[in-house]
Length: 113
Ligand code: SF4
Image (cartoon, rainbow, N blue to C red; front, side):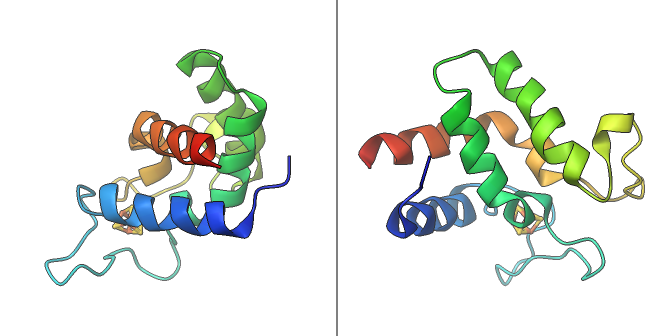
């Protein structure tokens, strides 16, 4: 499904507002604390995440998570699918941690059109 650029922009803006604001990597000045070699998985894979929400629409969170592992994690160079995504212990995967909230935001924004 083709996502209109306006919807994608809206989704990204909302995620930055709602997820970054609670993310442990967020800095007091509002910037992201992740080092350049470990870019945020949520925004790095945003197009794939939006597509998986459209394709698994109206199914369960388990279905979404299964699609996340298949479609996103398997294409992530940190490879969460293997059970050891290679991310250093002190670094998090925001996409994995906040996935239910991300799905909720994407679903609502897609419903707006
Ligand atoms: S890691 Fe991602 S979700 Fe967390 S503050 Fe940085 S950009 Fe936002």
